[in-house]
Amino acid sequence: MNKFGKGVLIAGIVTGSFLGIRKLASIKKAGDQLSLRIDKVHGADWAGGLLLWQAYLKFKVDLKLSNPSNKQFNISFPSVKVLYNDNEVGNTIPENQNIILQPVSEIKVKNIEFEIPALKMFTSLDTVNVQKMIEQITLDIYVIVNGMELYFPYKLPEV
Image 1: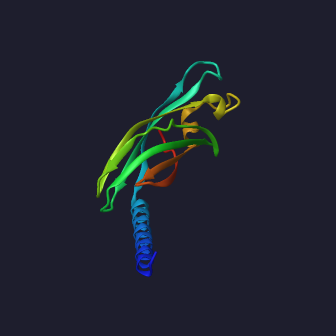
Image 2 (image 1 turned 45 degrees about the horizontal axis):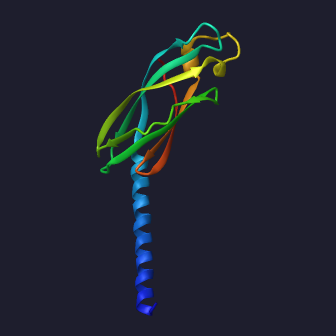
C-alpha cells in the first residue's frame, strides 16, 4: 500500500473512532437523564396453597419511565431481580419487550408480575403479614437503553 492509501486508512480509522466515541458519550448522557421509578405496587397477596412449600407471594408493579431529553430511547426490559432482606429470591422471566420512549415524554409499563416462593422468603411462620414482607423487598431493574445496560435499584413502596 502506498503512503496515500495508508494516510487515507489512518484518517478513516481516526474519524470512525472519534465518531463512535462521540456517539457512545451521547447515548450515555441521554441514558443518565432517563428516569425510571416505581409508580404503583398492587395485587399483593398469598397464593398457591396453604402449605409453606406450595405458597407464594404474588404482586404486580407498575413502572413509570420519563425521558426529559431530546433523544428517543429504545428500551428493552431484560431482567428484574427480586431481593428480600438483601438476598435474591426471584426474578422476572426475561422478555423481548421493546418500548420506544419519545423525546420529552413519559410512559407507564403496567402489571409486571412477580411470584416469589414462600420458602425463599421465610423459614418459619413468624410473619405472614404481606405488607411487612413487601417493605423488605428491593427490585434491581436492569434495562437496555439504546444498546447500553442501565441499572436501577428500588425499595418497594407501601402497597
